[in-house]
Length: 104
Image 1 (tube, helix red, strand yellow):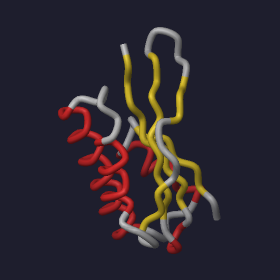
Image 2: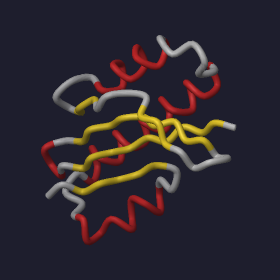
Image 3: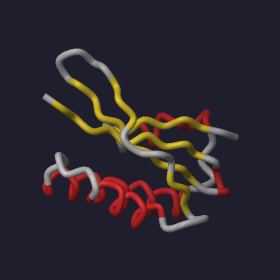
Image 4: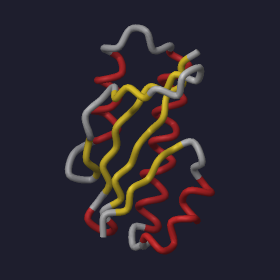
């Protein structure tokens, strides 16, 4: 069984970067599926959408879920982009199915 996981690099007020990994739940192996897309430098949401549409094995339901989750994190960043690594529990609690690396 396959599972998808968004991975974020959090650059504070400078922006965020996002990529997508595929995780095999049977073996816990992780396979990177996309490069990093940077927000707000570019339209990371649209770049992710275009990239995922080219991966025909990703179902439309998974595609919608991934993009909705990305939207939620982007909206959160727009409100709380000054969040520091020492407060990372707040974001990890809000988005438990995503990975975050804080780059202060």
